[in-house]
Image (cartoon, rainbow, N blue to C red; front, side):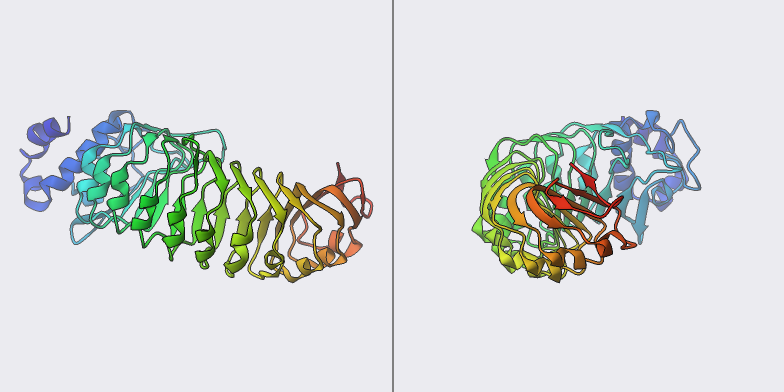
Length: 370
């Protein structure tokens, strides 16, 4: 259909031939027809309403079409942002041609929604041609229905820095070829039904990694020791897997801001270093098999906003220093705990919710007891 459009409608138009790249228009026409553009909610050939943009396949420059950004006439970004709170409504699949745009830096087709259940309708396989994209830095296809394994060719796109494939139906596994993406800083592939597999040790060879999302990805076994190399990591989510062993790998993470590892099989004592990282704003350790107590060092976490310790295996007296966490907004302490929540913490203008076990005392009208 893209070829038919080019030969029957686009190329015969003199103004088009004079001012634009035939290859670019063909690639975008392939994207349009492959994602059922005639059924888009807006900006399609059958729907000229486009909030100030030109609709796809119009005679104007493709650089003026909805979601397209160009530099010096070359397409650098495709970003289908919602208009008026409504997604464009792409479906179908991605065409091979889209990754053959030589100057493309960003492809952002995320289905934006506040619902945890809603997804877009983009399906099919991620094209192997992604490995031929010479300058691609960002791919965001979150909350769709992509299927099949991550193509091995993706690891050949050496310029990639950000990959967001969360909330799809991807299978297979992440391989050690991830180490080829040496510039990678953001990698999230959570909530996909991958095959059961361990975490590749090669993640430890990504010195620029700042955000890592591997939640609900059917991962098993211990976290590789190489994770200790990720000393620049800011955010990590390993929740909802079958990971086991200790979490000593966090010792070197001096810049970590958010640690989410709930609903796993982690065990052993929690490293004291966890409670001495002043950059931490969120700690979620619930539903694991740790042992020991919450130490007084928790009072060092002056930036901590979220602390969820539900059925962690920790027990005993909660330290009074927990009441000094003046930035705290959400606190869950459920398990074999004793101790006291202070009136000072309850009176904090930051606190939004405190949920505790029956062994902990709390001022009236401050805590929910379970």
